[in-house]
Length: 173
Length: 417
Image 1 (cartoon, rainbow over the protein chains, first blue to last red):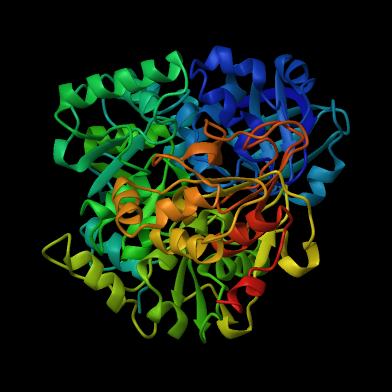
Image 2: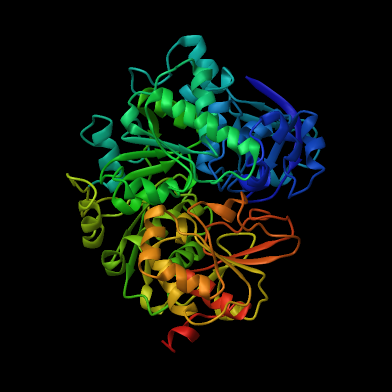
């Protein structure tokens, strides 16, 4: 499974309030409505950059803060195809798996080399990130098989609809 | 040689033991969601095509994040939650009941050794009662609601040993802010944290909940504490059987930290990061527009009493919003005369709700305004305008600040009492 998108570089500790503020979440919970406010308190112009089919490239602790699943859902709806970061907050990581948004942990050294606007290709099966402008790549640890299966289907709901079972049903992971 | 989490997850997944790194599928004892997350959980269940919850007695809904509703849109969310709860026969704590993390244990849903899944990041709070309690998103909550099971990676555990006694007007909040300043906002990502030491052993339920609550601000998955005497007494008034889970003496910890509580002083977390912690005295004099005392972190009777001690017979100089975390706490504060004292001092005492902490209602900040808040996050724009600022502190620091309209060290007032 390969994903290609344009790098949008962000910093450390990008929290879920920055991704989609609670203020809006308490006005509406319709994802397509919320998408208008993505990263509003960080940089309102970011949403146009995301829309072209993007890969967010961030530092550590991406998605920290609230458990709001609207965060990965809004990012996905806003045009984000994958997120590459030094580390992810755990609830955000799990939510992303469930909604079928790939999150890839990459070493800081490589993240620093990627420039905003670079075209990136991510191979989830092989576990590799390519920067197509710089012509460099890095190995990343691939997802456990059952998570890859969920991502491949576009989220846990799609997986369940297809197999009428969860990947963890009746077996050890 | 197991930690608390390893033991609970072993029991709940039908194994003799588990070790950090194992993947398990565990039985869920309680799953809950609130008006910020329940609708999406209901929709996720529908998306899965599963139309019955696994056990109506183990699924709980709360209307607490925007309660009473500040808008017709939110009212519609509340309506959808009530409809689902009625259809499914599940308990829903409606407007005015209080914040999920306060009400759940108060109403006897939290048992030592249990697995609790909440569609809210501060679900780690229930670790104060020796539960493996974790925050999840709406789809994970939906999976738990639908099947009563969820997969987990057994986390490593970090041990924090806190010895010594907190000094007067240095509160559990100052202790956890100190821990945050050491471990940092991503220091416990994917890990659990256990607190040990005499300070935690002697601490009351209110303070323990504050400490467990903010584990997620370090990225922690869970914050299960060993039961102590005050917590056991508190639980005995609410549940029949108590089977606490202790860590083995030779349990393996990923890391260990030591803190001497007697050396701590009042602290604030300076925006926009929770781990940007400074002594109050270094920021003293900062002009403040609003003080908020409440939330799942510090909306309990100990916090309200502390505010009363500082504010009684005086007048606040800035807006001071006080919101008890639950109806029970509200009633207690009324009976003990605290509410009257706070209102006389010029505070606005609101009904139980998450309120301004999540920017929902009841005191949002305008452009450039500065708040001292006893809540748990000081993220940009969380309580209102993007240019507003949130400083996190204890109820003592917040109350003292309300008196002067400037950030002050509460010990100044403590010594006079």
